[in-house]
Length: 276
Image 1 (tube, rainbow, N blue to C red):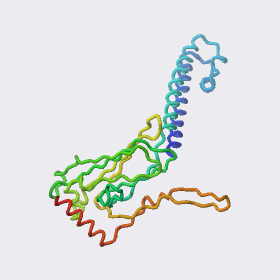
Image 2: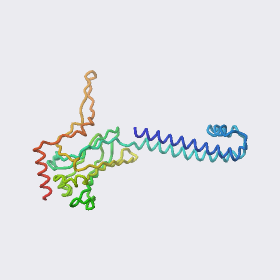
Image 3: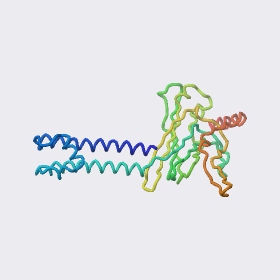
């Protein structure tokens, strides 16, 4: 829908420019070469319909028409270029998480590593390529004074392509100890100022159409959630004896917080990371 609105907006601007060119050329001819032969309305209609040359025999008219055609060519070229760019450079329909998740990895080689996870969904009908997720932190270094803050920390993870969804996972061992401590202690000043920024970038087609989407989270937006989203599900049609696979995009945003026992164990694990 964004692409359609952009095309409509561009078309309206093109129409205004095209109309302005014809009005300007009509005024130029009316006050300089017409000498009362035709009314301004008739001149405007003839120029707008590009019928002036066949209706008026004037040796100076060719120069006026050359100016008109030059500006129309520039206007049309710019308009065509924008429309072409809007059609090819479609923005991907990305779903960013409502919360950041603390969870343990389930991969064979990284089993039980505590991570900050960012699960994103791609609702577009095309794949995303060379997708990079960058996570950066802005946090108070000491006390409650926002003048003593640090915003230099960042981590980056990349993946070659994303079809429907992908979970970026950042090892909690690599995060600043201060922001981990702020998450545990829940100091009000830190809760208000500490921010985690997520930036998703990449390109969505073979000509290198790039995109960049950002979203900011507070420490209160971090939850402990170990559940595995059931995003893909099958729809069976008995009459045709076929099965279709689709995605439940709402599942990407569903939060299932861990039990109190599991939450306490995770907090204890974070405290151990802080001490190291």
